[in-house]
Length: 312
Image (cartoon, rainbow, N blue to C red; front, side, top):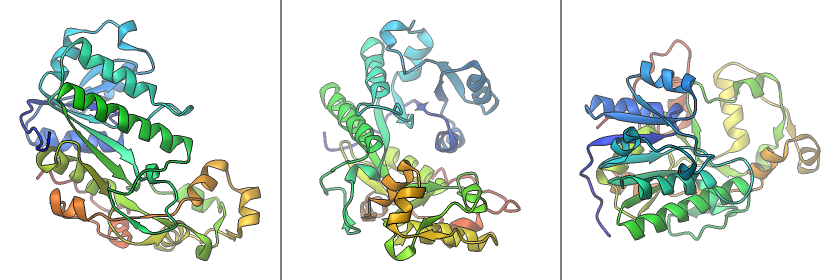
């Protein structure tokens, strides 16, 4: 399968958080019905208030153990599926993805699936520029779970002849996704000359890429999602601190960092890579609203009127 299927009648989103809500708004502007999968009645009510039809299902349990309703059948029928749900927090497999892939086999296959993965699947690349043909070598367990999910949904799509697109994104930032508390708390960072090369994307530009993938992406294709600017993690924290008039975080050398920073932060600091985003720009035609951090931070001030991502 080399060309993407464009014929879908509805949108089905697994994981209606920050990005899922932005993408839902875009498709609502295109007058397509949107269903969101949630686990609780409280989340279902939140989606209803946003004009999104909720579907209650717990992906930590197999659909074989749940009553699959007619609503679920209709939600998937000829649907564009966005899989934004995070994997479990432990292990090397994404059992939630495996449970989701049981659902179409029970009821109705979707038209296509867009899976939001992470650039972490590339592992440590020593800061070099990498494209989508770079072989994955995930090291952190969170990245191994994402790569497991990538492979599982790709193989399922090939067997079922359902188009699957994978988006590998760098760090996501938005007005409500900035490390301001960490900066105010003066949690230390590694010295800038020791910090790894990192990648990021504004949430509005990520939502735009998710839309473009559905309209222009090719089945089986992988797309790196990043603003393409070269930076490092400590520079990112310092730039945010400067922009909001906060003291920069104190810095540590590696020996100090290994004693004071969390295992999660250390795992990020041990990986360095720069994403080549040309395929996103050229094939998907994404025109970045925020091509650098300074432009993006201007949208993150409390007094800034937030613009909805483009639905084009």
